[in-house]
Length: 461
Image (cartoon, rainbow, N blue to C red; front, side, top):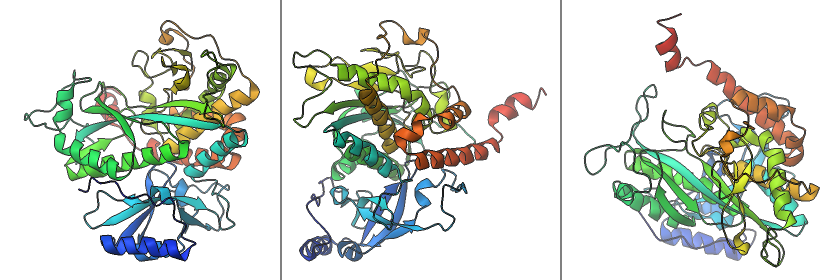
């Protein structure tokens, strides 16, 4: 495992012969054979092609079917008419700022996150990275820059060989699996030190800017906070973080599990999104010069409250995700907001004026980071533009308030399908495509017979 971060290649332009030669020379000197040309599909899963390093350095054109970004989690494709019958190509264009050595490869290999670009040069509307870029560009047109920091939770489990059985905690160095009650314990972080050492080296090599690491409430459940930054760059890091966790876990005989509710009776896994907005001078527009909260801050929260329910299907994209929204579990059931209040869907942490921000607590760990960040930023921006005012902040238990979010996958799908705001804020063709993909995945789920049905119904009906 190489713990050294790869050099930055963001200064290169592969349209220039000198830059192509510089990169090719580096690949030859490092023995790099291939480059993983990656992008996140609608689920957030890595798709793409493996390209010879020499061809990549030469700026060779790479194409893929336009439908791939909208591949269902089941491997199926929707035939909704929003997708062209001809199944045309898109170009894969690398973001050289993401070009890093792949820390899990046994033979020297690099990877790069790519944009999916139509043959006419426009961003592919179906690609999640495009959706986020389009939202960020609307901020830029107003002289604003959003800032985002995600907190990502996941479980480490024993290897799963039988999907009909429940996930179990792995055996630690003491010879026993963890049974829980170890929240915020440093000893339990040390139980799987070989994994954590390798994983830390991997994210360092990938340039992922992690902040704190902690043991969460569930057995072998962990949270890693990423440092705040540009939304697209942070989404790239979250995307690669999940990929690296899975790869390194497998190398250690473990599973890194990002399901929102992987184990019955245990805590769900979230992806909380801290967000703020700065102006052209780098000043946080959520604070006034005297340090108090600004009108823009309230308008932003007003937008989150107004539009977030229509985006629930983005924050909770799978049937499993709705098991996480349980009252009293620190997972939200509404879009109430409050100061330092973890019973609300929108929390404002205690912070100095320069760091004033709002934490959106809706997204599960299974959410696509590009789409979840795009949805929350789009809602907040709409609130700024429309000068929406939020409800009064909640000081007591937010779970005492009515449920304000869809309770099931089906109701979330129906709400997004009825919404006049989701197409306006995320793109009409994308929303139609997203709904089609999610409907197909749900149809597939309905064909399965669950253990509950066999256990409860078989002997009694």
